[in-house]
Length: 355
Image 1 (spheres, rainbow, N blue to C red):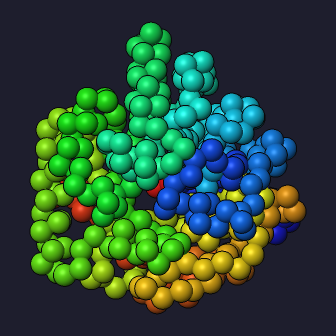
Image 2 (tube, rainbow, N blue to C red):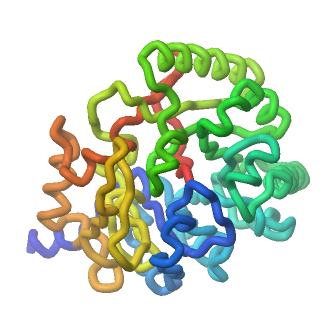
């Protein structure tokens, strides 16, 4: 009897990130979909598969509808929002903004979506060159539409977040970030550096400092920018790859969160969940390695609670909390990222996936 009760118990999770589609209408230069386009598997998660996770959603703080694709390409996006909200979870998504029309903005509010994130890699025409197929003006328009809809309906949600990719090629714009985002009226900005290098020439874009002196200067500058942003009402955070730290558990929160791919596979993080059909190569510390794939089960075959409690998954989570880290994590730039925060900042901030 106790075994049966245990079998049906679902874990309490901080979030479940669901890649409802791996299709995208953008061609961002740093995205694996751009590099691995021949091997890429463009999929959509079925509404039935999504609905099967309802018992897990009831024990989850946040259901985040985003992975390696553009969520608004899924025709059942708002049906999925309704399912997750009916389970009592907060719901968020991250978009490139190209498909977020005014009717969609109104519906986001009507369905009580809690967070809408927008991906950017610049605040000038550089963004459009780096994030090909998307436009900065489309993001600004979508954010304005959301503000107007919120004002008309007298609500504060959804919160508007920015997932900002900081590269060497756009680092000259960082001084202007506080003013730019204050004028846009966003609630939070998380600035990240590139954590997945899919081509050798991108390595220089990911590592923003080559000496400890340069790193110290960069860190001090970013703390000043963060202070300026706070004075302008912008909650800004930086999480950057540092070449001067030893591998450590990253912020993917694998002990209290998980990722479900568009194929139904359950993985600890998005970096082990890249939808390619053949062996591919990524680069770490200038060296090529096979792209990691890690799935502990598929929701099309087993309930999420059974997958979560499988011995191999439990062992992975235990190992993740140790200094040694699982082998698959040691050559990941996520384990070399550090937060750059003002001393008065409280630790932690909202989830905004970087892609």
